[in-house]
Length: 185
Image (cartoon, rainbow, N blue to C red; front, top):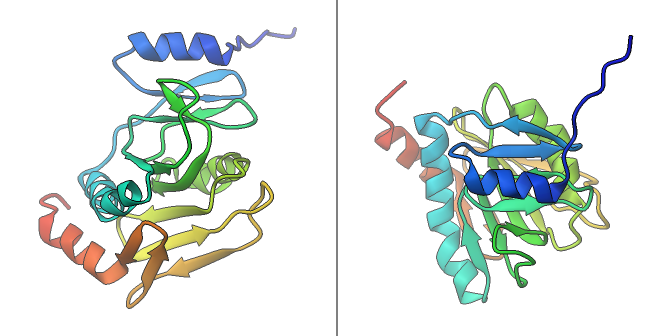
């Protein structure tokens, strides 16, 4: 016996997101509830946003935290932890052309961020940098997509400074603040 799996359109998804108290991702027409983040996850995302926001605004771009959707070319929709968009928004609820995306990894979603989301984000011709941040160890994985694909990844770790067009991220300084600020282990 075959069972039909319900799928919804992007427009139906947006209507649901407007009314929902929880955020969701849309992947292949299916809706997935998003998990909450840890203290270190939120600290990492917030600190990176702080480091990049002024530089983004100085270049006429708009920085966002985890409440702004990205609609990918394939029709999926995700809420990146940090995003910078430089062109006009196609809709009041989402962006389609991010310049920079940051995802803070978690044990439950790290593999999805590295595979599914990385491929989907890279579809945007506007995306110049994708950064995956490990909130538990001094490690950031960086891709610079071109032509709708990721050809290579580099790792930034202790002693490294990641230069972005919106500001630099000193790995040690970032994690020093996270470690000083986090109260839970």
